Length: 84
Image (cartoon, rainbow, N blue to C red; front, side, top):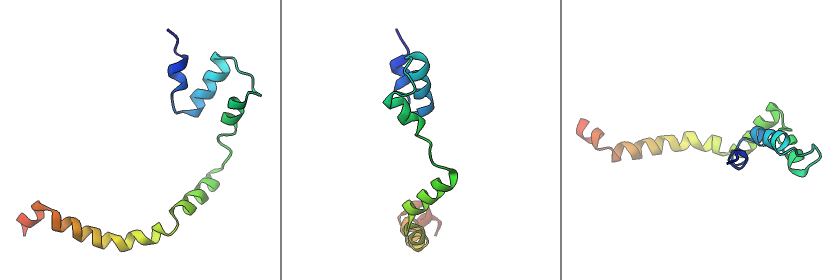
């Protein structure tokens, strides 16, 4: 039994790159190896900007919904009804 198929199913791109290069002896100019090399081409600042764009207006909507959701769940709580 070989461990290569099991290792290739792991979601970690670093482990996949290691398996492809070291165990399967793929060259650095292979398409899949190149894709994994370019996997981390963003800086931390780029990542924060991407998250900010993804969250967008939801950041402002959350405080407005918090009050309604809290009241809704308190009304549904049997423990809170027994407490009152």
